[in-house]
Image 1 (cartoon, rainbow, N blue to C red):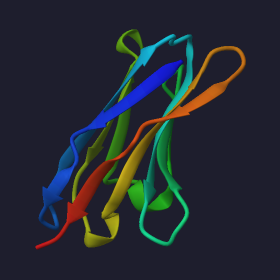
Image 2 (image 1 turned 90 degrees about the vertical axis):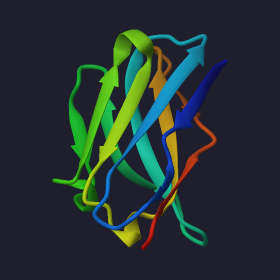
Image 3 (image 1 turned 45 degrees about the vertical axis):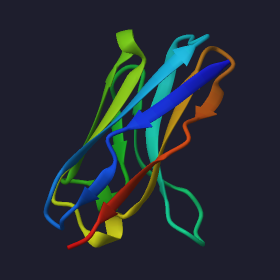
Image 4 (image 1 turned 135 degrees about the horizontal axis):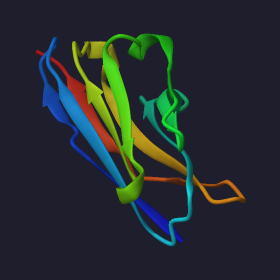
Length: 117
């Protein structure tokens, strides 16, 4: 089994910055991809950004130019640096990891981000 634990959420004013972290532990095999998803009440979880094991990053349009995803494969970690935050970035941010040759996916429990003045 693999456990993902997120940290770094909190309350920030519009225009501010936050850095989210996620660490995978347990029976972690090779990392195929890790990513960040956001969910708000009443809506489906949606992709924010992900990064492959080879370091290729992908961003959904709202995150482009403001967020940066990075990873530390040696520590099975992924990070999301968020800048110029907007109220619409508010939500629970979940970490997802895709590991091993069978591409098993795992989820963290989420970290709350509130962007408000």
